[in-house]
Image (cartoon, rainbow, N blue to C red; front, side, top):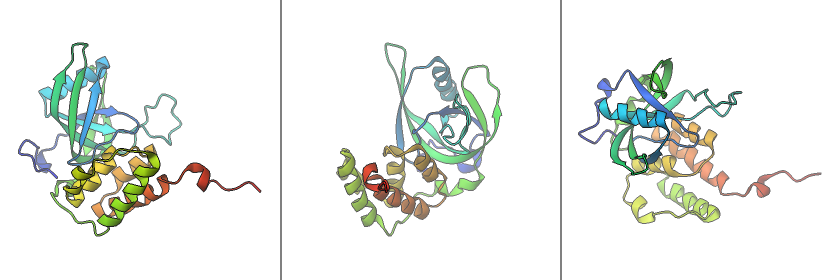
Length: 219
């Protein structure tokens, strides 16, 4: 989905990039993610990213790890490019990342600026640079999204979604919907658009049902 003239070509993606580990926050190729940056180490991260390729990797801490500090990361994240930036009077950065390409984490790179940096392996995700794709089950996906939104009392901008092509629709929903952390990670790791769309559709159907309704009855 590298349709912007400012996006680096796939073969020029950086060897390493800063990462922002944040539970529940992911960004998929072509989708926007607004972020409010206030911690000193992440202010450093944004400042440095602006001076380089404007790229930041969004990676979730691994919820399966026995790590009380949350430093163990999931294997796969997504790099986003800073496409909007502003400063606030109280010392924060308000930025918007637009997803570019997923990557697998290799080794971590030591830094002196407080934030974390990793070597990125982009090789599995060249398809993220495709600018279109088809989802045969689009109508079913939107029907399930409607039932999910009603059950969860979510506001959905339907007019905005209707004009998106299938690839944009799925990636925007994966980025923005308040799904569980493991579910978000599974969607990040779904390589193809069709796999991602089927998984998302199934998750929406399950997530719309209140927990009390799916819990087994006591005997």
